[in-house]
Length: 114
Length: 112
Image 1 (tube, rainbow over the protein chains, first blue to last red):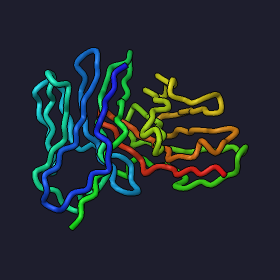
Image 2 (image 1 turned 180 degrees about the vertical axis):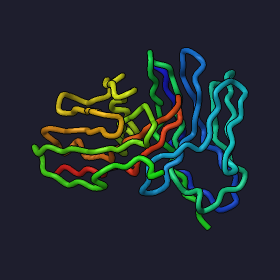
Image 3 (image 1 turned 135 degrees about the vertical axis):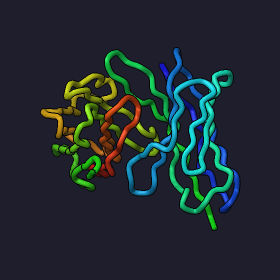
């Protein structure tokens, strides 16, 4: 079935470092792709999304480009902050009949140190 | 907007007891999802509803788990009897449109 695979963490970076979290997907069609973020003690919240090939999603300095040729949707940020410490989930949206449900990766924990 | 409201935030129970988790979705959202999060398995979809109708419950682990959505503003996830391996964080999420989910803060369940 449709799924995503993301790099295992934890990832530890110093403040202002460059961040990349890898995500690749397997799908039979042309899914929409997402990054969700989970801050400590909270539920997940949508960070960004892309709905078709070559689309770039961006939010809060984070970016990800939908790459059909490499089936990837890597998350990047040029300069991370301590407040970016969280767990990041890559997700895919297949279409199932009259409804839909996101398939999430296992999450990548990011710790940014001062 | 109060967001998705889950209760209780924490639940500690003994093996064999019945556990009921509750969720109030955001008003106007027509889809509701129950997810379970563990360190080993990550985030797993248990079941989701569209317009109060269960669409896919293939993620429900076994017959001990059941979920209902009697109306657009309330859903329950019940485990009976509970087992230690059910210990996890259970999230409810609702959605107004395709693909954008709004998550509650979760229920931390510990079964001793």
